[in-house]
Length: 177
Picture (cartoon, rainbow, N blue to C red):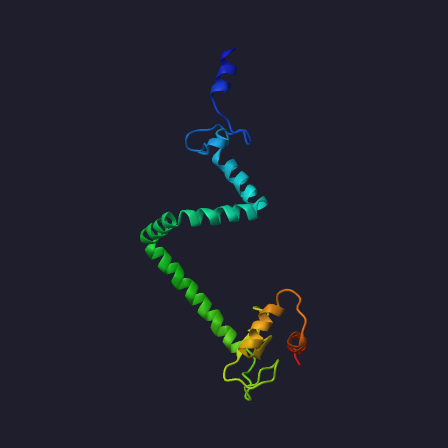
């Protein structure tokens, strides 16, 4: 074997992108010893996307089996990044409080007669059910029982008396009646 062939044989290059592998960019995975870190990351991202259900199930079972390890790691992460996490939490609260205030202002008026707009019964407390986060004025005031029904109805197709009434009111609100 000539010197050049022997030198190429001894130096490792990534099988995918042909980059020279060093200790800094070499993947630590034993299954992919001749792949660089960036190619390994791309492969794993694609693998997790293709096998998302199986990967989620694996992660869930791993968390359940190693619950105490995860708790320790979370506590350690919180201790080392406490200030950053508190600032992020404050920013999130500020942003979401402002959006909640905006939604409160844009809601339709609370019914003076305290009647549910679906079952037409008088209730002490009514909940505001809206189906469009961009347009919170598109919503209805409903009792808790009807609110649960609305949440279910907005999911898969459901039939029934409350469902029909809800769809009628929803169409009326959408069209500005």
